Amino acid sequence: MNKLLALYCLILSVIAYVSADFHISTGVATGGRTGVVACPSNYWNCNCYGKGDRAGVVTDANNSGLGNITPDTNFFKIRKGLCGMGEMNFYKRNDGRWEFYVNNGDGKLLGTCYQNNATKKCTTVLLADKLVCYSYVCNP
Image (tube, rainbow, N blue to C red; front, top):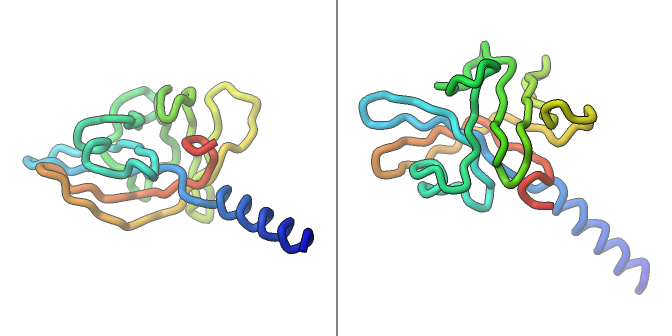
């Protein structure tokens, strides 16, 4: 019985680790204006993307707002604040996944993001989910 309980606890801990932590999506507003925002997976809604509630600001290397993540994009960052984290740097790898780290940190990998294609319609914004990120950042 104890072995079964230990196995059950192990499975639950692995499931908790690999669940989606946050999403990075492009919003296209009425009129064509675009922007990229990050939101926790448990708050992937119009309040986060449409109103900026709990949102992380996604920028390029020069801290300019990022209009979209395209196949040519190989680096971006999320400014300090998403889920209480410091600034995070994202690097595209050859196989298409993204790895991210704390800016000026110890080099420890925080997580990995993969392409995602979900969409969501908010009042004046159409969200196109670009990446889903697996980590512990928003769910310690």
